[in-house]
Image (cartoon, rainbow, N blue to C red; front, top):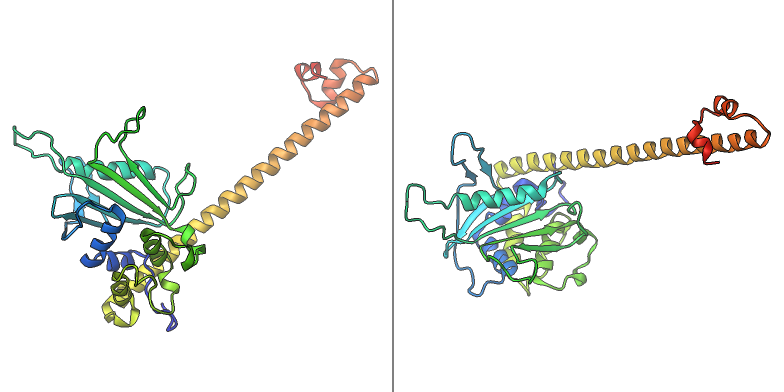
Length: 294
C-alpha cells in the first residue's frame, strides 16, 4: 500500500508505465523527442497489444504498448524491470514479428515494401555484456562504411539506473528530462520538473497523481506495486546468491591453491633431504610430472 506522503505513482510498475504512456498526448510527445522526426508525429493509434502467430504453431507476442503513426510507422514500447539472459535476442524477435505481420498474405503482387518499425525499451538495469549507456540507438548499418543499410528498423535501449543518482541540473537533453522523471517520479514531492522545456510533463503529473485515481485504479496499482517490489526482491536475492557463490568458489579455489603450494614446498624440502621420488610422491600426493617441475 502507498503512504499518504507519496504523491505520484511509480512509473516503472506495469500499471504506472501503461497509465502514463497509454496517454496519446504524452506518448506522442515522447516519441517526437526521442526520434526527432523530420515531420512531427501528429497522431498515433493504439493497436491490439497481442500479436498472434502466423500459424497455429507460432507463439503469440504481447507488447506493453503497440501503436502506429499516421505514416504507418509502428512503435513497440516496453518497460523491462528484470534482465534476461537472451534479452537482446528478445528485442530482435519482437521487431521481426512486427515485420512479418506486414506480409500481405494471399497477395501475389506484394513487393516486400515495409513500413518502419521502432522499438523503445525502457530498462531498469544495465544491459549485460555492454558498457552502461543511458541511451543506446541500434540500426542496420554496413560494417565497412557505416552507411545505413535500412532505415526501416531502429531500436533504442534506455537504461534508467543512472538517473537515480542524477540531479535535475545533470539533465541536459530532452531525453534526459524524460528518463529522469520516469525513474524518480514516485519520490517527487512537488511538481514534475522540466515543464518549461516540455509542457507535457504537467500532464504527466496530473495523470500520475494518486489522489486523482479511482478506487479501482488504486486497487490495480497496489497489486502492480506489490508485484514490482517482489520482483526487485527476487533479483536482489539472486544477485546476493550469485555473489556468495562466487565468494565460496573463490575461497575453495584459494584453499586448493594454498594446499598445492604447500605440497610443492614440502616436496622440495624432502628432495633436498635426499628422499626418493617415490617417497616424496607418497608423502605429498604429487605426481611424478609435478615433481619434475621442482
